[in-house]
Length: 183
Image 1 (cartoon, helix red, strand yellow):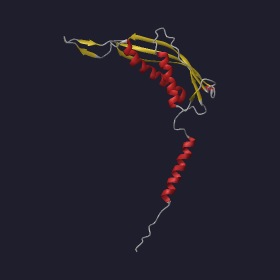
Image 2: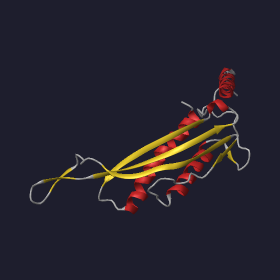
Image 3: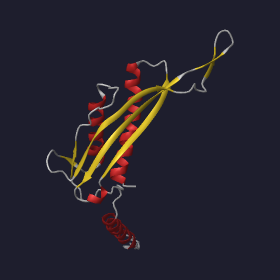
Image 4: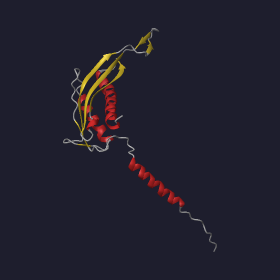
């Protein structure tokens, strides 16, 4: 029988163990989520009533549900109705559809003339009260506004199904970033 002696090195497994140990230490020193909410555990997000002069009947409920889902799904915060570490509340203070200038979108009509399409603009404004009981210096009252331009030929239901979602998503992103990222 001919047995060959192979050099078996323990350097490779040792290097892997050191690497994993180093990653464990780094992970405990740095949060990879980028969240500034480190000590807060609970959140209460109250309904945002629609106090705008033009009322979209579904906006209050939809906005309130969407902002609650954003915080509960993308943070480690747990929802509560009593004694929260974080309180988020506010109101929808403006909901407006206004005509804008004629857009640069042009079409040629059958007679060979150029027709420009008119556009409208949806603007939504939300006032937010954010109270952080763990870090009171982070608390604020701010107003968030966003808008979306759309073809004036859209019906009211098409506006509410598409444009309202775009604008509210942008506003919720701004609120979420101001609270969680604290930039």
